[in-house]
Amino acid sequence: MQHVLQIKENTSIQSTPLLHTHTSSLFLCLPLFSAKVGKTSLIMSLVSEEFPEVVPYRAEEITIPADVTPERVPTHIVDYSEAEQTDEQLFQEISKANVICIVYAVNNKKSIEKVTLISLCVCACRVPLILVGNKSDLVEHSSMETILPIMNQYSDIETCVECSAKNLKNISELFYYAQKAVLHPTGPLYCPERKDMKPLCVKALTRIFKVSDLDNDGILNDNQLNFFQRTCFNAPLAPQALEDVKNVVRKNVSDGVRDNGLTLNGFLFLHTLFIQRGRHETTWTVLRRFGYDDDLELHQDYLFPQLKVPPDATTELNHDAYLFLQGVFDKHDKDRDCALSPEELKDLFDVFPYMPWGADVSNTVCTNDKGWITYQGYLSQWTLTTYLDVQRCLEYLGYLGYSIVAEQESQAAGITVTRDKKIDLQKRQTQRSVFRCNVFGDVCSGKSGFLQAFLGRNLMHRSFYAISTTYVYGQEKYLLLHEVFPDNDYMSDADLACDIVCLLYDVSNPYSFEYCAKVFKQYFMDSKTPCMMIAAKSDLPEVKQQYGCTPLEFCRKHKMPPPQSFTCNTAAAAPSRDIYTKLTTVAMYPYVALKPCSAIIPGLVAYQCII
Image (cartoon, rainbow, N blue to C red; front, side, top):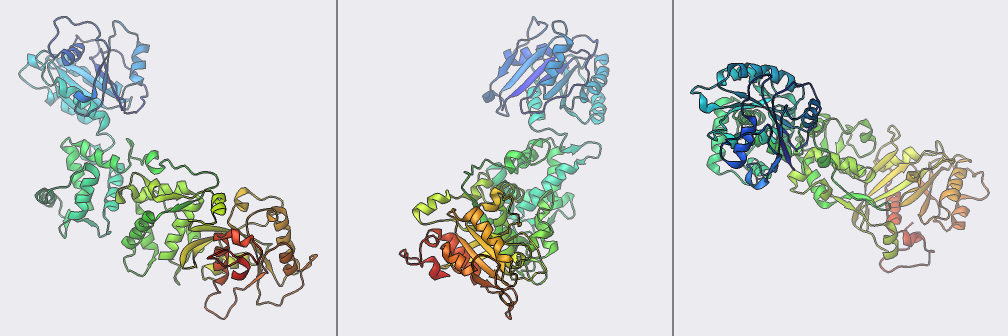
């Protein structure tokens, strides 16, 4: 990161858009048509640490090394002279500037009066301004009384510094404030007219408070405050320092401290106080640690850290990510009913800029009898998002503050990228936890009922996805069912990419099986993806299928297990889950499914025997 400070003689200034980067440009501007006020002398005094006897029109470009600046960033200083350079060159320099200094002479009344005109012109550039009163050695009074109204009039003016190039007074401070105006600007944080923080700043700090409130009780206790302090500043607060902070809040905000913990109002008050006392860097350090950029939006690099996913790999949450998400659930399940009510779900996602889960989620995962997402359903939805759209998962984890709370470099640390499935087949083992089953079937064959039965529900619901857990040999796994739209003419890669294919037909419809046979022959007959035939609606009278052979003969011919009977209409409270366990088992051990029934692999049961 490099700062560019550019210094210029006063000349006519027009509105020119500036590029905001962390490479700052500082312009020291003389008032229009006024006598020289010493902007070049300021540069030369800074560099040589003595007042120059001979001052050129323009100083040479210099770079101040990072190790000699308070902010530890290199500072590039570029001078400008109207006598030697054109307006076009001036505008080029302005276009690279990130901070502008307007210089006046404190002993020249006309010079001070011109500051307003210069500020009006330069403010259109939307860049921080520093007012610099030079030649303070020539007067005994301060110009601040005249300058303060100008500062209050223009919010882009960060501060005013009175200095003297001759006796070196406040020269270093001038450039320090110039750097600070770029790295820690006041403008995005604070409104001087209202003497309060701006809405975007309040919104960002509110999210930070809620992420840091690990038990969601509305206060930051001493442990949480110390964790926050270590996270942002790499050092805890001493017990007495904590009490001093809370005492300051108590004296100024009636509801700032509750149960010996800092409330949101108290937290916001502290940051307002930091800004008002010129300690913007404190608030900016907090904001940037929690992922915010200069516009108080979460930075794209924070929300979407780099994560390489090979074409044949899948993405899953790892153990640490599940622990984090379990903690988030527990934090918001205030009534401890292992489900999130609409109010609790809204509170959980309050740290998001939008509501990420719509009504369709309730049809995709397990819910309780009130339709509220259960603990299992909550984890299932996160698993689904990670599998189908890992970038969106990274974004969501970023809003929740995963890297902060879990003390990880980024959200990518919570993602496991699985190895290529072909390697699993070669090694005859897999470490994956999520398996995808694409469900094919003709219209009205019972696919939707098959998906909803997996979630223990009836046909009142509809979703193209259903995900929940199953157990295979004592191991908990996720089975993701995806209903594929019946279109023989076109199947996308997503329709075909899966761990197991479910071909479902209606036993009471004589033309239902034909669709499954066509799909199998066209897309899966030569594939290594295992397939299973489901005879749905088995509670209804079975009719002969109008096809060249029976479903059983078709399965035998293509070395598939016999059709598996299934119905949603049972006397039991919920349909049997056995079929879903079978699907997951075959998905986990496809190399067994592809063997004939006589093939036995040590430690495993042959596929046909499982069925």
